Length: 99
Image (cartoon, rainbow, N blue to C red; front, side, top):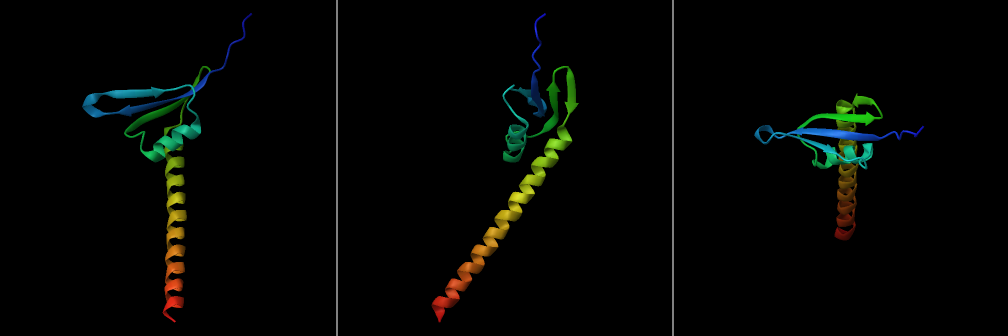
């Protein structure tokens, strides 16, 4: 008896209005790739994201969008903290040079 391979992949369905729906399916795309593409804006107008694993289908739309949004917020906070620290360093340097 031949052994069955268990394929796992994501289907990202986007709705482009009058242009129609488009499903992006690539067996090499990982969960991380999907989250990164949501964050970058490559995936927009998402109708659903399904994770296909063998014979089961799981709707992971809300989960992956929430993770992408949380990561964007964390990145914004980190970059904002860096900007504040750089401004404070710059102001200290200006104050030292003024003396």
